[in-house]
Figure 1: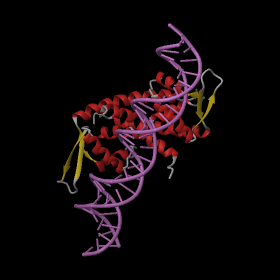
Figure 2 (figure 1 turned 90 degrees about the horizontal axis):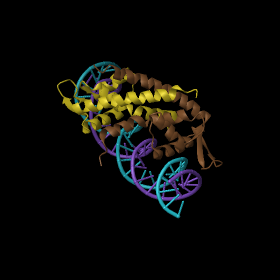
Figure 3 (figure 1 turned 180 degrees about the vertical axis):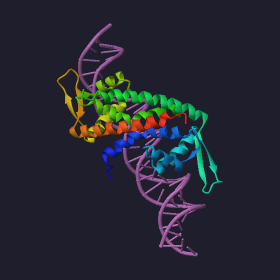
Figure 4 (figure 1 turned 90 degrees about the vertical axis):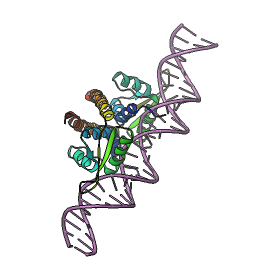
Length: 112
Length: 112
DNA sequence: TATTATATAGTGTATTACACAGTATTGTCA
DNA sequence: TGACAATACTGTGTAATACACTATATAATA
């Protein structure tokens, strides 16, 4: 079975950033399928089978709220950040910048 | 039990970067305990109970090799990257830079 | 019309890996 | 001697992604 090692490590690397990516796009309401393509276009590929459970989880945690729109051709479930979600998101961004800076420092001096 | 939500998300954020942090420090041989403090000093805090299993896992995956040094006062287990580890590490750094750039773009236009 | 593909969302399971708490040993220093 | 720091290991619980599968409605195509 043994999935390719590098692939696994890269998955891990992207793992924590998924929430950040998703939250960043949900200031305005959007539905899952459009998110996938929108993120894909920006160089972040997320599997549908990963996104949908993630959206529901974030909603259950109170970071997102959702609403079905049945007026359009196909029924779509729109998600967007709650106020709480806004706050958490802001804090995550701050910490991300911090982490990112630490990493640059660690990886920068690679000739050591 | 419900651990604090923000804490959990931050853990997730750091999670994938741990391997990268650790690998970055192991061009030269080092033992676990010194790694913890060295990383701590650089703003990356990693729990001992997280690091030791991680080191053994990376060794088992062939990215690190280890050696006991019993000549010093206390017996220490030194780890360092293998050639394979060097290659994987280089690739991870590349992907990290890529990911980092994508994130900047996503988070940059936060007034949208 | 029948068939296929695309858009859209859900569920269930297995794997993985960190976190946490506890154990164990050996030096050092008061 | 007793307490504490240095050093490493293990086992268990939890949390989250990945993967494969299901399901529906609409658009496209043969």
